[in-house]
Length: 173
Image 1 (cartoon, rainbow, N blue to C red):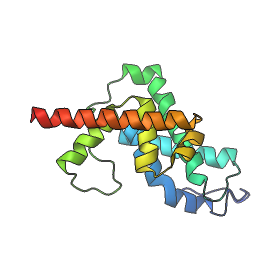
Image 2 (cartoon, rainbow, N blue to C red; image 1 turned 90 degrees about the vertical axis):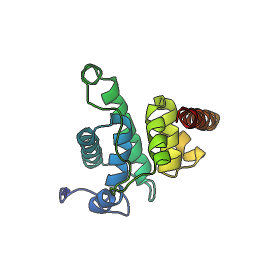
Image 3 (tube, rainbow, N blue to C red; image 1 turned 180 degrees about the vertical axis):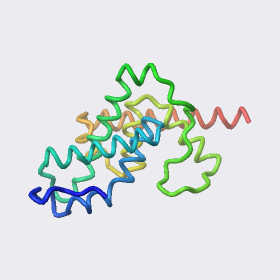
């Protein structure tokens, strides 16, 4: 467990430990979706919480997760853009699970997770934030700093791409 310095001011109504306990798994899952590497996802999560401690942003109550996810997604994108990442083969693109607990996924769920991971980043961002983190279009617009119309359009196009991908799988089997 991470310890905060004694002189750290309160970031919100929640203490650092409460924020960590409440959101760490979500951050790791989100980072894993992007990076497909558990250790890298854990590193991104740790870096996000280090930024939380060092930057000490003033967070509105109930908006802690928004800040944390924004930092996590941006960190993942930075890693994906890095020349080291582009030149390094991190193994199989098929990731095993998104859930914090280990459970057997149905074939459809696994196909859907694979299809989401294959989406371009701009579509993956809105799908992850909307369906896996539960954010609405307005909140996604603020997190990604894009217009409401762009969020809606990307969600719609992502759904079309996912539907087409799943229909193609059905015909191949």
